Length: 198
Image (cartoon, rainbow, N blue to C red; front, side):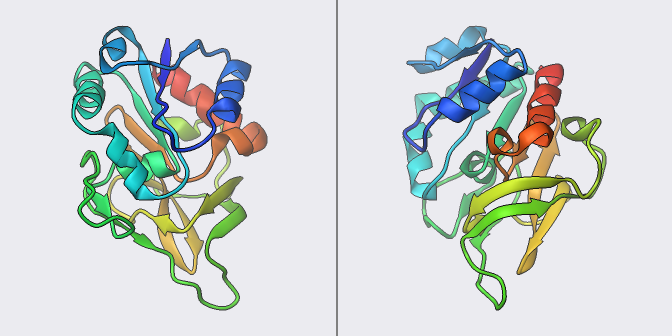
């Protein structure tokens, strides 16, 4: 059973439908204790980093507890950014700190526009379980204005004005800046690979 976390940062319907296509059983937990008996956690999201402040206290403890019990965690878009220490979009709002570094705003520079919306390619930085069966330079769908730094945890890098971490992996913790639920067959394969990790 996969826990799809609803913290008011976007519509979960498309993520839930994509997970159903790859055979996942999904539950949206109502309280932190609902994470005690799940096999994996997905934190999706769009919007401002401040919205992650809904995941403080017991929710934060429950998600970290699931990771400590070996349950895979996947952050999507804003969910990836939340895996880091924080973001300049919401100073003082702490991230989960499972990845080192701060997320920063993409600066517009002709001919690039911000927000970064649309299809762009993944350049693999190192092997990742999320990308098994997927070709380097595969196209996926993005929509964001802030991005995570390229650190040792980056498994894929995408460039829009500057390079940023489009996917990260550390142990059982994964994150993708793109939206797999909107990225066609490539996105579905990413979700299936996450299920295989679960």
